[in-house]
Image 1 (tube, one colour):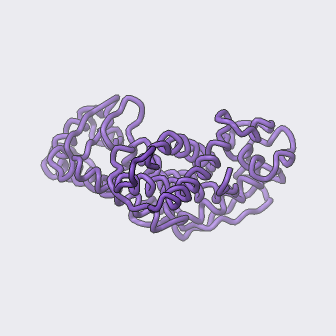
Image 2 (cartoon, one colour; image 1 turned 30 degrees about the vertical axis):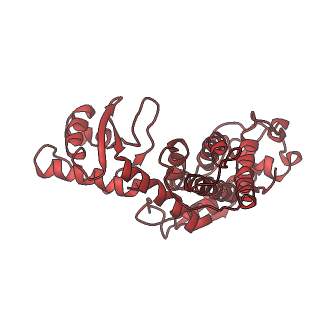
Length: 332
């Protein structure tokens, strides 16, 4: 069960509660399903109960209790827990979780750099067919931000036009100094990684090749996925999507990537994509040590499945860096 399929399952639960008179609300068009946040549990979480609480005239946890009853009987769902003010945390049964992981990895590898692009049933199509006019000042950071948004908005079916005109509708806090001495990749990262309302740091820290540098971690993680593929080929095996359901820390940000692209486009916020790439990279760097056989161990189906997951992560990292206008090295 993919996040999209689970979203439909959540909406069916809402519809059942409405049909049975337990809730008096308009069934929403979509339910956001994400990885569980801090304090959460299970495979996925949704805030649908918080979303429906006010129109239902009930407390979020009361709405969550009603929906939990219907979700517990859904195919593929093994358990539903309520955490925080009313988040529904959904656990899938093992067979369904395995198939969901296999499907996600296969989808990423098949779509390649276009994974996460919309509009489609999986994504919010708010921008489909729209022309977005970005009016910016004559400022380096504004230019870089607008250039990046042109690409990100295009992933969601929209088209951005950039003009230097008043009234300005995209005015990020300017950089305190010229970022050009950092080089093209580090300069763009320095301008894009902070939120537009935050002042960017133009320092040599962005060039340091160590774990403290988020840009280095993202680019190094991509390079590691390429090295894993080369090393696997030298050992005589390649990737095959399989059961990697135990690797939720990496699967979750990969599944989240389409939603992050949509949010970055809608809110004109490339920083959301940049921060998500850091999360993906950190998860990949924690996972990479499980991919290749150790010692005299022979390559197995598990190794091929883990390699496929690592390659999927590399695909997402490369695609995200490309949208930011930053290179994704094969070697680092």
